[in-house]
Structures are given as structure tokens and as C-alpha cells.
Length: 426
Image 1 (cartoon, helix red, strand yellow):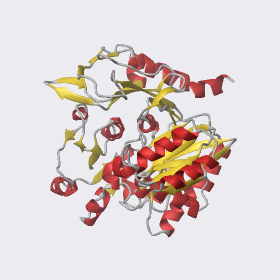
Image 2 (tube, helix red, strand yellow; image 1 turned 120 degrees about the horizontal axis):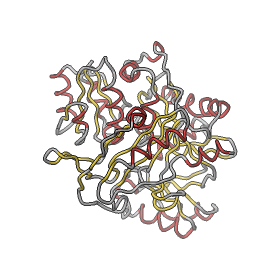
Image 3 (cartoon, one colour; image 1 turned 45 degrees about the vertical axis):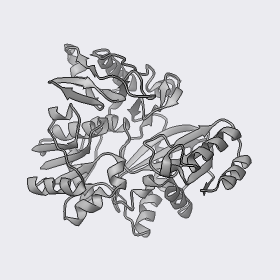
């Protein structure tokens, strides 16, 4: 089987790494990939979706897997399917679950799926009136895609009104923010739950937890994610059942009833309040860095999972996961998330420790190959992933590996998975 992975970040590297270890996969391509995906396969440049589809047809590629949200929201799946090509991911209409927060919230309301109380509006007076009804903190969300930055948690009513005004005027996020959602703040702990669906059947993956804040102790600004781990002990079988029955099952069924079957990865960003799950948001692809810790736990060959989902045949696949834990620690550049950093050569020490080589690996993200050397060129440069029989063991491997990697301005959190370790110690 020949496979194309669309994207060029750590998530796509992790998917590619799983496929590269799969004996069924003969040729692996990335579009556009990054400076390190060249170690796994071939990078491809294409001007648009049609040009990429041309390449897939010319090469006889059997399966395309889409990593990021932007091409999904822009309709890459529709383009490929119209040409009879097998592709993993939701259609443009189904991708509205992430592409429009208003569409998502109204869908949740229609099918009685638990979420925070909210209003949607493009009128500042309506936003201000609802803000006055809420107790801070207050959540203000831009409707469209904002690269993970379109959510403001305001600590005062005045701050919430200011955020709404900046969005509605177009100053904050341009057209993406000219319709907003104002919602109540849910006080609990967050979980990331992923389900892979073929439109009817679905498989729920081990629950993960992401660490969004830049600094230890969940302080500092929000980022795209500074680390993650899976599975998390913050969920038990009872909570899994609640999430499946109240959220995942009605979502897959509801999309089907609406004539928009959901195929691909459904990423439920959840808040757990007093043992009850609420949907904060939906994404229509793997999270990054959650993907980097889920792929190593997959026991079923990756090619089978993605291909069966893309061809509406999940019912004939038994999906299994290793009884292990994975922890991923993001190494970021000096100025992340505030601005760009100067390119810096990445130096990796020789891994002489046999256990480390066996239990840890790197997923490269913001890197470029310059004159044969790998340079850190992005905000989140790479993810150090450790796998072990306990969360502590996996975490130790991840941090051991992080210590073997050097580039100017390297920074990372030192407390990834701290909540899980606190639960295990209590």
C-alpha cells in the first residue's frame, strides 16, 4: 500500500512514523512534510487540491490521510472523492463541526448533547447583555478557524466585552471573529477524547490530556499544546460510558440524520464537572500533541485503521491498543508563542542508553533541512515521546530524551502529566 499524509507538523510526523513501521506500507509521501519527514518518505509540493489529486492518481496512491484542519474545512476530501480517490477525513460540510463554532454549538443544542450555556451573535449589544448575566470568568469565542487562538477566557465582564468588541469589529481575528459565541465558564478538568468513525461505526481511542499553558503549573499564555499523555487515570469506565452515550454516539448518529455523515477523527474537547462530561469544542482531526502519544499505543496496524475508516468498513476491524502509557514533551523555540525565533541547528546526542532507544522517540514538527543539517524553524519544534508500563516511566523516558536534544533557546515544561501522577500518588 502507498500512502500520502497531508500536513507537515508533529501530528503528521507521528502518523507517518506509525505507517513507516507498518510492513504493508511500501511508499510513503508527505504534502508538504517537513525537514525530518524526509527520513520517513518523500515530500511533495502541490499548488492546490487538484494538483495533489493529480499526483495521487499518477502514483497510484491507495490512501490519503489528512492531518490539519484547514484543508478539511476547505474541502480537500470532497475534491478527492469526486475523483474516486480514497481519503481519510470528513467532508467540507462535516468539517463545519470545527470550522464554525456556531454550527457546532447549535448542533449540540439540537441533539441535547451537554455543553455550556451560550449565545451566538454578531451584535455587540446582545453580547454585552448576555455577559452581564454571567459570572466571571467568561468565555468568548470567534466563530471561525483562528489557529487555536480564537478563545478568550475573560476574568472580568469588562474584559469579556472588550474581547467581544475586538472580535466583532474584525480587529482581533478578521472575518473569523465577526460572529461570536459568549458562553459560561465550566469549572472542572479537561480531557481530550478521540473517536475514529466511518460515518456509522466508530472506535473510541484511549483518553488523553493536553497541557495548553506555556509554563509549569498551567501558568502563562495558551499555546498549541506543550505536552500530552495517554491514557489518563482521570477517566474510569463509568465516565467513558457517559461520554460515549451522551456525546460520541449521538454526535455520529446526529450527523448521519442531518445528511452529513462524519468520517474521520472526531476530537471532543471535554470539560469534566463533578463527574459529568460537557463538550467544550469539537475538532475534526487529531490534536497535536495528543496524536504523538496515541500513535505509539496503537497495536492494530495504522494502515488498516485508516483504510477501513476511509472505506466505511470499521465493523470488520478489531482495533487494539497496547497496555502501555505514552508521555509527550514539546520542545519549543525561544520566542514561542509570542513570535518567530531565529533558525537554530538541532544537535542530538548519540543515544547510547539501550532502554532510551527502545522506549523513546522524537516526532519532528517545526524543522527544516538546511544544507543537510536539521534546523529548528517553527514555534513548536519537536515532541519527545516516552512509552512505558507506567505514566512515571513513560514520562522519565520522555524527559531523558529531551535532555539529549539541543538548540538555541530550547524551552519546555517540566511538569507534563503532573495531574496523572498526583492521582496515582493519592
